[in-house]
Amino acid sequence: MSWKWAPLLLCVWLVGGYADAQVVTDLQERIDAAEIGATLLLEPGVYEGNVILTKPLTLKGKGDVTIRGDRTNNVVEIQSEGVQLENLTIEGSGMSRSSQEEYSGVRVMANGALLKDLLIQDSFHGIFLNRIQDTEIDRVTVIGQGAGKLGNQGNGIHIARSSHNIITNSYFEKTRDGVYVEYSHNNVVTNNTMTKTRYGLHYMYSNYNEFKDNHFVGNVGGAAIMHSDHILLEHNQFSFNQGSRSFGLLIQTSRDVHVLNNEFHLNQRGLYLEQSTSNTIESNEFFQNEIGIELWTSSTAHVFFKNKFQNNRIQALTVGAESNNEWFKNGVGNYWDTPMLDLDQDGIGDEPFQYTSALSALIEANELSYLFLSSPAIVIYEKMNELLTANKIMADDRYPLLAERKGSFAIIAGWIFVAALAVFIFRTRAVRKQ
Image (cartoon, rainbow, N blue to C red; front, side, top):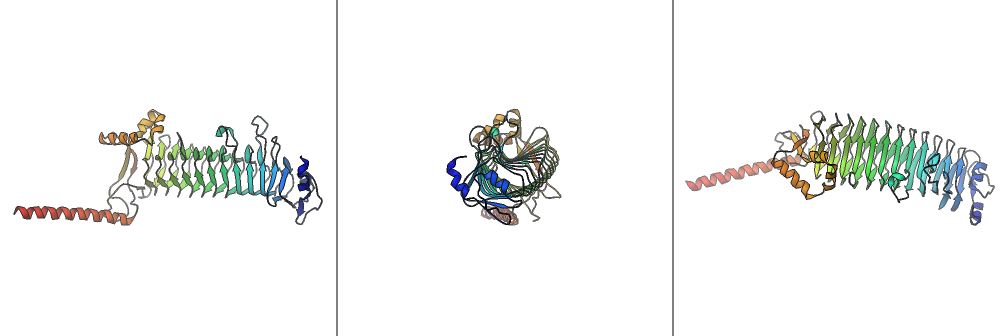
């Protein structure tokens, strides 16, 4: 430890019911000396890291406080229940991937921790939850290294074999995955932002998890659900996830995933389903994506209804053999930005709607076709195949919805006007001939 920080350490005060007024020159010594349940209030400065908390304790910064590791271990390791970290900057974990464990800014190894108002940087993983439960993480920012391949970096939060944890109001940037969850169930991720990551949120073999109100912006992939069942995702935004094979949301080898009320904007592919079954896609908005939904026929028994498709270059694409999925449920289909008649005013198009495309064969034959999705040549290719009746049915919606009832009135009014005008012209010509 550098002597220049000694005056700052001498200013560290213990407050609270179990406070000890003794001044120490080492943070670990102060932690060890604190009473169970005490609050260590740290004055502004930089403190030596690689500390271990083995008792219930609150470590709280007063102003600009940094705990800095020596790049050989975890900066803060929590081994006791009931530990709280608040208002701290934590940096300098070990970066080696050949060591016995992957290090992190904060490693949590006991239940019931509260991590609040933290900035974690210059660390391999930001936070690592290892075989624990009931951790609350709120208003945490994790900034990755931002250099080299994203796949070689650590995650913002790495959750391993841990359950009933809550992550809220946090921000993740330039990490491998924003939040990575493996073999962990019943966790909730709410109102976070993930950007410039590989996957903003990544589930592997994790069931009964929820994520809501999150923003996935500018990642390779917004969120990836793999080998995980019974997931609810609601009111999330997936936008600007662009790349050669990027997506807003990937569901792969998973079932009973409920995709409800989410927005997919300006992604290469809004939703990508592969080798999955029995998922429900309900009331989502797909707007200006290159492909709204891409569905490989290895995925079956999905139900799509109340979704709104608008201005996507390709609304829906089924790749492979004939698909076995439903584009309606209980007489309710989806909204398509295609004019339809609704003479009986029930809000459902009078005729079934079939969305067709020829692009699936092109992509199946050569995945390099993704590189040309934004090219005008794709539009020409689709039009030519349409004229040659070579397009195939991608989505068969027997109960297509009209966006607004007043829209159907406008269509009917338009048709009535055209009919009246035709009758007028016909009669006028007939009178002139007489």
